[in-house]
Image (cartoon, rainbow, N blue to C red; front, side, top):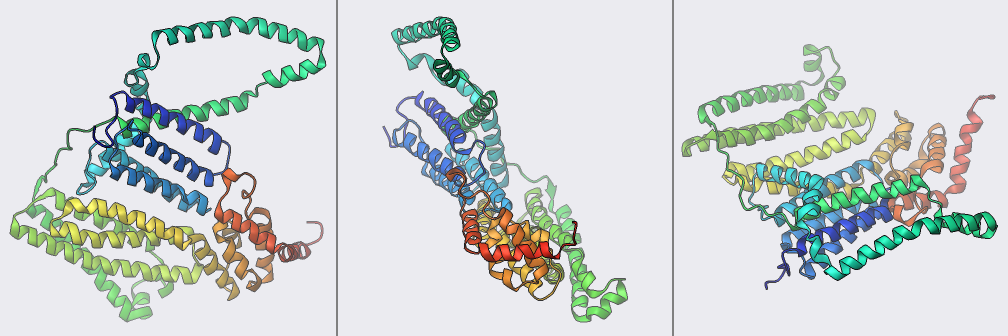
Length: 503
């Protein structure tokens, strides 16, 4: 028997049931009615440990690449124990779902690299659909229920069940009578048999959802095998049509690049002569439109590469047109960065602007990767690399800590007497608390009192209440408030002294 090979055909189905049970219990014990924190990471570690144990016991067969991907998915859940930002945690969940789906795809016999976009898309759709409905075939016909016990043990279980059902009425009657006769027995009786239906339904719902999702995903991971590869779709157009499309797009990009050069050298005079806007207003407009332009170039080039049937000379021409388009796209990205800089100088930073910039960084890296793969005849290596770059950017954002960056930039604006949006900064997650506390003494008193009041009310609000909801950023924020409690209360009180009487 080779290493990792299941002991018997039905063992994988039972392993899926074990995984479903552990998923249900971990969600109920660690996550139910609690804020997201270290509990999600612990649940992920627990499930990953169960998979390792099932494989070590040879109940299931999994390739090492699937185990590595499951390990990465577990690390993604570590975001909830580290950062408090909802945006960062949402990106981490997205990464966890994608990597988890690819782990199932690899376990089913699929290839991760080289692989095309269609392979990845179908893999993720199948994993999602299998997780949603896979528990039904698992329970209905894949688990050999009759093999779980001998005939004598099944008869014994049936007898025990009948006895419990028959015993219930007399036990309830005699217990009710004794409770009526004796107050001490009544208290014991009520404590034993009183059931809070809301809590019971909450437990039942979490257990049911956990078992359903866990069973469906485990079936995708342990049982399903894809023997037939996906069909290879070939292009439907000749190169003439693709040449016209790319040439037209290159012309539009050349026109835009020429205008940007005129704006660069002509400055305010050129802009005001051709628009009704000041130079600052002109530069601030259109940032998100330029981001959309950059994002659309990627699917356009991929579609053009897939759709066209080319000979060797036409292939060289296609690569030349694509290279020119990518070069002109660099002008678009520079223009977008310049407009973002003026955005930041005029209005400060926001989450939308930071995450859009992160998307642009990922897009620039992906477009460079496209040039290194698709334009060199290695299209099947593009999607795996682009997915990996996405995970790298998400990890980099966690280390960068966007909320702390946003708070620092906006508070420094307040120090210089520029426009400062107090509600926005105080509404950031606890990831921003260290930077807020560091710069708080330097900002104007009017803003300082409001920020201090907000910190006292919200910082570290979920830290320390329950270890399952613990989060590093919230714990740090709570500690910072505790260390500076006296000064924060003094600054917060300044707000009350400035309010008019009777309000």
